[in-house]
Length: 287
Length: 273
Image (cartoon, rainbow over all chains, first blue to last red; front, side, top):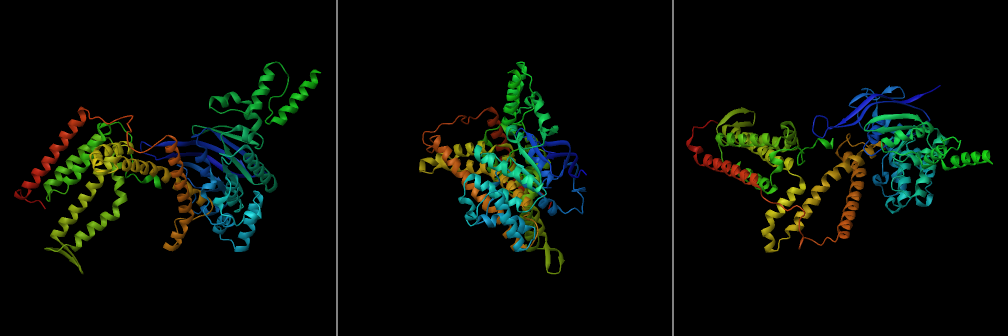
């Protein structure tokens, strides 16, 4: 059975309503997210991505419309916001800026401690989360401020994972990282998603990043949700994407260019490997 | 939550007040503040209220928005009114238990309260209509004579503009860190005072770290642009008085003269309160 985890019903949000600073951050969003999905949320700076995801764990209240989590309306009076926050883990942009404890281990245990768990459970979850993001035991007692940029970010992500969320939202988790650090983080998230079946929403402005991992892509433009489709189908609409200043992965362009030259091949490859196989197949046909 | 604080904010609309030279507005604010302490009767307050209302009208900043700024001083305001009302000796009007309200108390409570409100409204009107950069530019130019007696005017102005520039950045940062920690289950709102103070650690530590990081980055960026302080430094947009600034000064001086006249003659006029 399909289990709808998060539902947005005509949700809008206006910042500083009634002043000259008034700003419609998101408009009339309708959205359904099922359990275990791996979703990419893409949009230009200021398109409303960050506002949208902050609605998902109740940090921002919708100006109008309803949001349902596991079938419950989160604006309901009886709804416990604390539960939502622990079930929908939100990793902000540059999460390493939120580190504050004296040791890595203590910092990661901040989340589970706030859930009111006993010490053993807190320690187990902390240990697990740190292992998941590939932080070794030798770093557990280090100060989080001594770590490298990539390590700090992984510690910060572990801080959310330690709460064992059902939904994991990552806001530009790879911003400012080198290609190696980027691949490491995305591979770990993907692995985690496969192993635990957690729902993942990956926010980014780079198609290249998400093409390889996500099953479904949401595209935001000027506060509206303009595309909500399977990854391959979204890239086939690369001309539309360009109109809103987004680009499809480079392989999409290569495949389309080849097809325009008269080669008969499928253009829906999303990764370099897929493109290579498709091109090789095509070459064989000609030989 | 933090977005609601309007005091000291710039309000971008197109009005005569926004186009005035910042020096006019600085001098004007100073004059205005002096003027509200010059008189002691009802007549003076009428003059000030009229002046303030006309300025607010000219500024095109919505009245509601300006009044919102008073929220920040409501406690101080209540304290002032309370102490003046109950602790001033004089002819007793009402007595409830040990609390006495005297005629003089009522008088001074009302007037002190009004003075405070005027003070805040007047000075916040300046910040509503002047960008922080203009403000420090104006201040630097006004204080320039002091540099002859070795006061580091440029440095003071630079520090001020950096401090002002950082207020919105740090507010935004606070908001962001707060949300990030709330996403990790932090609670900033409930509990006793000790629990709340402790709850601030996850907010304050990252905030300080980020403030230092930003300060460091800025210092580096300034060095990279060969900043060496004010000596021999020119401005891209130097301040020049225009016709309307002269008019504004005339308007201000007329108002100030009026208040002085009132303060001299007010005791000869019939008392209203």
